[in-house]
Image 1 (tube, rainbow, N blue to C red):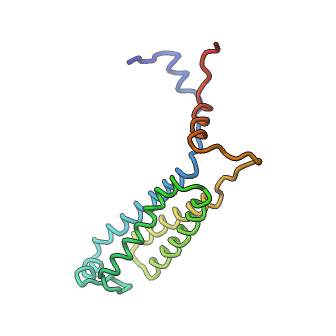
Image 2: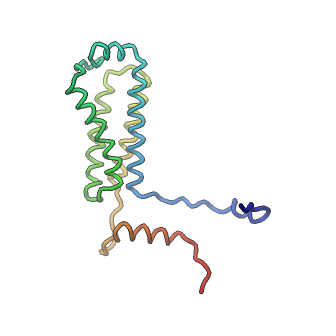
Image 3: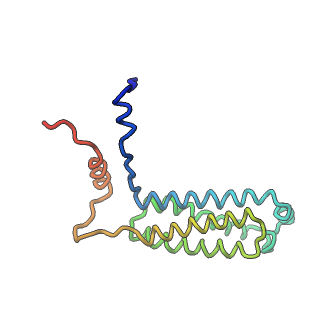
Length: 176
């Protein structure tokens, strides 16, 4: 292992950092993951509430009142699976499918977050709902401003695009 000392080390520290712009698909996947973390932890923290515990023991969701049964749990699973699929979908789906899917799903979930926060008095739940809403608005904004192809040339397929962008960031080697 080589340890730099003196001027070489100081020169490396004073160089300007490169702020690389991540691909829109990576940004969307990261936002969906963040939203899911907030979503999960708000629900997990809810199990410390007396009314939630008593409701669960009675087999009923507190406040809204639906019975906790097969149908409720299946629908709740679908509700969680959709944004989970959006993580992979944001990374893998082509732009023509990805953009509208992110726009539609984020807006639908934004409405559901607001609807579930109605009549809620617990601060943690309101804070979590605000965080989820901010992340969902960010998803909508990123998808809305999806970069468009300039000019008339078709964009390279993804492996060539990655190889080209990777080579563009490398410093030129010795000239032969």
